[in-house]
Amino acid sequence: MKLLIVNLHLEIGGVETLLARMIPLLQKQGVEITLLLLQNKVNQELLDAVTPFCRVLHLKDAFPYTKGHLRKFFGQEFDVVFYTIARALLVGSWLLGRADYRSTKTVLGAYQTEIFCQEEKQNYYHQKLVRQLVSQVIPPSSIIFGNTAGRDHHAAKLGIDLSESPVIRLFVDVEKYTFKDRSSLPRKKIVSIGRITDFKTYNFTMLPVIKSLVAKGHDVEWHVYGDGEQFDEFKQAVADLGLQERVFAHGLLKYSQFEQVLEDAFLFVGSGTSLIEAAACGVPSLTTIEYAKEADSYGFICDIEGYNLIEPGLDKKVFKLEEKIEGIFSYTTFEYSSISQKCQGKSSLYSGNFIINHYLSVFENTKNRGVNTPLSNIHIAKSMISFTLMRIKFQHNIV
Image (cartoon, rainbow, N blue to C red; front, side, top):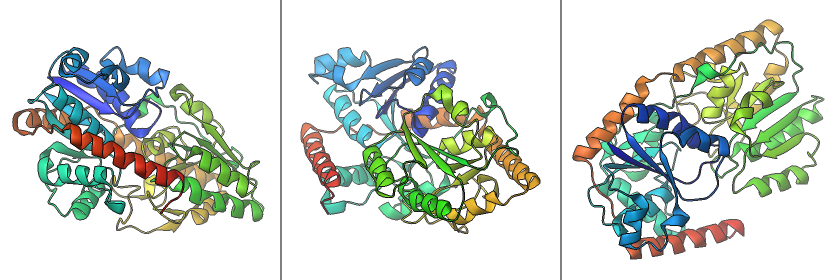
């Protein structure tokens, strides 16, 4: 099978580390893989991890987007293309259409709560087009979700039946991490690792929590690792609250330094695969809720049944992050060790090579019964104008 994967970039993020784990395993199964990145943002360690197992292409090298050049650029027609984000779906479908690759079938990977079902705010064309492709063109059997909550959310938002959409839980190479007993550590350093972006609202809602904890006499620090379009806004919010000596925005993290930055951490707060990886290291991992307007949580990952951990609107008890953090401050050594071990136990459920076979079955099914999704020049031009207008309004806080 010839597989094209289209992703936004290859910086540290949940989807990117997932791809770094998937690509070698798929290649061992005989899949010929090409990875197309829309942006030039690349983490060298992740790049080094995938380049022995796939070709890596960059969108900038696809110019001038003529049929002849694109056919040389891609080098071949693909059986399946796997899109991990809405922008990848639009740009990739247009490029393959320009190359006149009519046999390449489309698979979507929906790993964020609203990645392919964002509401058409102010009638943005690109959002409308994505919703149309997902609800009317791409069959549910070719849309992969990371959990049932994401699938149900898309079904409700789009008003369609997605019961045939495969749910393939995220998998993490937990075996590479070393469990560390942290019961004797000072309960001071909290760590979060992930992109600073709109759906990870905890980056901002946690700031008043830290301020309140300090006011109550807790000697606490919050170390945030990651980049994103809201990074500068986050740093300004830290300054506005006078938390420069308590909250530290470190920026991008080298993947090899993951365990190192957790060495003296007593608590992890966040979402995505980093929650699981931190738990594998023995750090109690406290969930956040995507898009939440308040500093809310479903609790520690070990206390949550199933694999839906961070999606909004789950039928689970909701806690205040401040309440859960204050609770762990008062844990005895035994209680702390217990929650640490339970979180590590939960992380072990995300390991397993059989997951790759599930992906392969979806790709094979789509190859035989899926659809091609070519987009025209008009589609992409209107989408790019729409997206640019949305970004300008977002940057200038225009409602």
